[in-house]
Length: 412
Ligand SMILES: Cc1cc2nc3c(=O)[nH]c(=O)nc-3n(C[C@H](O)[C@H](O)[C@H](O)COP(=O)(O)OP(=O)(O)OC[C@H]3O[C@@H](n4cnc5c(N)ncnc54)[C@H](O)[C@@H]3O)c2cc1C
Image (cartoon, rainbow, N blue to C red):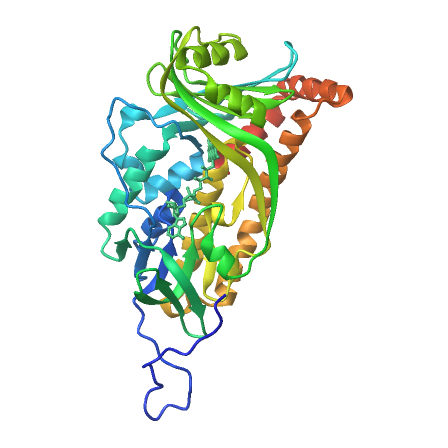
């Protein structure tokens, strides 16, 4: 952190016994990062007396060609849907671009091992909803834009952060100085805010990439999501609205380069073949993209007057599709903790510790589950190979275990 400072021009009130400076706050809270998680937190504070400044480094662009489809899609859990509905963002999305997942089929790397989760087994209509990053981002930004207690500054880049007993001061790259009670870092996996509080990151690179692309399918997907665990990676097909599907192929660098070099027709053929042509012939729509996959374990997610949420606080392997859902879990918890306090206390370390403690277990559980699965399946040991395939089959036969796994994933 840039070190405690006094604030020039802000003297203690006359006659006061205290020598601490008094502050004029530009907002009770400054959220750095207006991605899905930061914007959702701003919207979640609509019913509180807190004033919020949302700083985003990029100017949001939402004039997309409606005929195109974002290659970055999410499987939104029931808990995240509840949060997004509660803040009014869900209702702003175009229903024609949302796809419910009715069934999830998981395959091991021998032809027989298979595990299937169906929504009726958990007594629900859907396991998750697949939607595009940009559609949800648009809905969240439109929600936030209408809130009287939220001001958006975009583009805005913070250059310095200083904290003292009463306030945090954020100096922007353009020289503006903003004073607040609490800074929330929602600025993604490479978080600038996290660096400022000296929180250490144990980063583990999987030496894998998530290669993503969308396809039109010959056969209807019927709301079924597919996932194949191969020796050298994981292939997921997520049903998209209409007769489309979105692929996430978690793979090594050589395979990433191979996939990125393929022409659309060749990529479609390669992906169709890898998935046993379960959706017939495929035609690629839009471009192919690749993201590096990394696990980040962050030493602390709060400090005096600072809290981290979303990918700034943790990243997990996308094989369970839970990264953004974990971030929305942070939002729900931090909003709950802050709503229960007087605005003057929102930056207090002890208040923020309540948020940190409440999130420790769910985040650790998800990280361990995703990391364990990644290691179990990204392994050529013949014994492990047999065990994991048998494990999938056995789990498939245990109705109670499946029921519990489904409910856990939906409520994550
Ligand atoms: C290939 C892949 C597939 C995935 N699939 C899924 C899935 O199916 N389901 C799922 O739940 N998750 C998935 N994830 C994870 C998911 O993408 C992330 O968990 C999620 O985007 C995190 O949101 P965030 O708002 O915390 O961070 P980000 O999305 O990284 O947003 C951070 C925001 O902060 C802004 N910013 C950054 N630095 C600054 C700064 N210094 N000043 C101002 N603004 C700043 C950025 O411009 C950005 O808008 C996937 C990830 C990958 C890589």
